[in-house]
Amino acid sequence: MNLKILNKTDTELEMEIAGETHTILNLLKTVLLEDDAVEIATYDIKHLGISEPIMYVRTIDKDPLQAVRSALGTMIAMCDEFKSVFLDRASV
Amino acid sequence: MIPVRCFTCGKVISGAWEEYKKRTKLEDPAKVLDDLGISRYCCRRMMLTHVELVDESSPYY
Amino acid sequence: MKVEIIELGDRAAKFVLSGVAPAFVNSIRRAMLAEVPTLAIDYVNIYDNTSVLFDEQLALRLGLIPLITDLDSYVLPSECSCGGEGCSQCQVSLTLSAEGPKTVYSTELVSADPSVMPAEVVPLIKLSERHRISLEAIARLGTGHDHAKWQAGIACGYKNVPKITISDECDACGMCVDACPRGVLVIADDVVKVVDERACSLCRLCEGVCELNKIYDVIKVGTHPDSFIVTAETDGSIPIRELITRSAENISDRAEALDGYLSVIDMEMEMDHHAT
Image 1 (cartoon, rainbow over the protein chains, first blue to last red):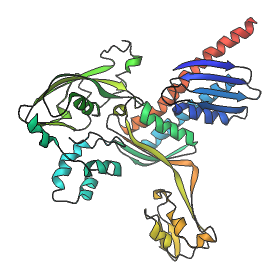
Image 2 (image 1 turned 90 degrees about the vertical axis):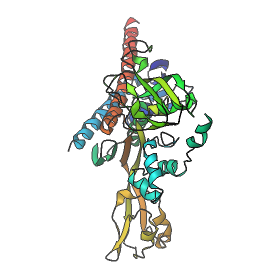
Image 3 (image 1 turned 45 degrees about the vertical axis):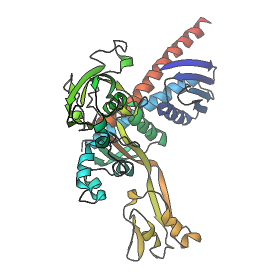
Image 4 (image 1 turned 180 degrees about the vertical axis):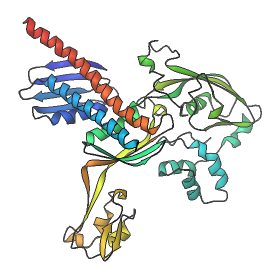
């Protein structure tokens, strides 16, 4: 993975996340949009296979970087919860 | 030779080919495929439509 | 988040996952198919091949053999300390030599690491008189992104849990029962009952054949938006439990890596802020 910040202001963040795919970005986008302070959260992969995804986040009264970081934290918690719930059920 | 995996889903199906070929001489292919655990239609067509050609060409190699 | 297991074997699993967003289930599905690495033969030195198959066809067949993979003892060549040159941490060598007449099976491959073995008996090639093959194959870790031979998950998918509602206006004519290809509906005590809701394929044939549906909403096929029936299968290289847990780990590892980059940027910005 390789990260490039293309644009960053107090309420906007545009970054290129090289090496990532829909696998985490779609989930990240969905989780971001559940945050009331996030106005826009979207990403685009211009051409499959040759271009890197570009993510765009716009917030109201919140540092977009912090919004993304807390969304990532939620994602990690979701995965951990799924893993423990699954293993718990699977061992019965 | 029978393809190693199903083209569509990727299940390894080639291991079932020899038994399938032997048993379908007498039995109904649908039952044999169920027995061999080939349940999806993508994998079933791999067996049903395969034509074995190695024996035809091997005398010329 | 809730998990209810319907089936769980060595290779195949089916479970209901509820209380999650579709995006999460899709991430898990994508991770199982394309992100969880497995070993597969990636490079073949062919010393002798007088069989009916061309070298490249033979190499393709070798590549597609599922190999039992212990993911704790191998690393991806791109992440290996050898820099991808190839060492015992990131690759295994397997040799095969055979002479006809006979059918050569994947089980005849001799592996340098005894824990790495073909997970299935695959007929590789049928040799007749005078046919010989002799080769050395190098197996490496890889992901389904790059080639289907590295795909640990097979036919991994999910669907919403169906919800069939039948209203009181139903006259139990039985048309829907006959139309349903999965036998989801039955008539009992002059009313249409749902016997196996999860078997429903959401084809909505029952809605179409119901005459009363033209006037009222008698039979309706809907879904629970946050519950999913997940089916997953592996090719035998890793057990299904491991595939499912590793797919979740893979997503959280990626999220953590991205968070790591962002924390660095965060700190730099903080420092800039203080500087000005």
